[in-house]
Image (cartoon, rainbow, N blue to C red; front, side, top):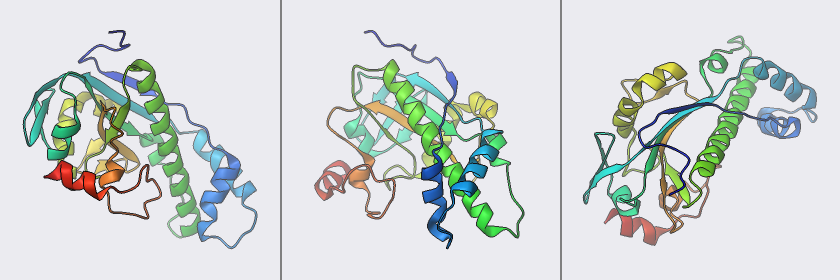
Length: 233
């Protein structure tokens, strides 16, 4: 079908990222009375560029089974009423992890310098966002025939954080190679990491349409109460 991937084949990527001085200055200004943070932003960018190596792993997999409350991928069972209604059983899903990497995660500043620590954390978040976009661009270039969307465990009540356990089992050895671990409480370390699935959906589905956190800065679509009721019924 012209897809540029092989089902079941694990792929590890080192992801490019760019940080704009003006964008970083704007982001770190939130807790500062300074009017010009260009020099500070430039210094932060130089600091993180020396160590940052964001990367991702993904595995394209065939959906093995779907019923009313769960779907099976990679020999694992995932429970979600919403996803059973929006997944296309004839198309692959892409199980993935994206991370800033342990190298950047280990970069810290003195405990008593709270403002600088906050700024560094903000830049780490920006790098995760840039890495996520680079990963999505890569994936879409390998699978151009359909519209891709994604969901992360914990984004909606119907697919909680505990669903990261089977996901990490599928990518276990690669997660180790990336330097990423899943804690007993289903949190990812480094914290600036994401896991989830990409899948084909041409109907405009976005998890944001089901989310009631209206002030979320990462919102990609407006809340849709009708869609929430329909998909969770």
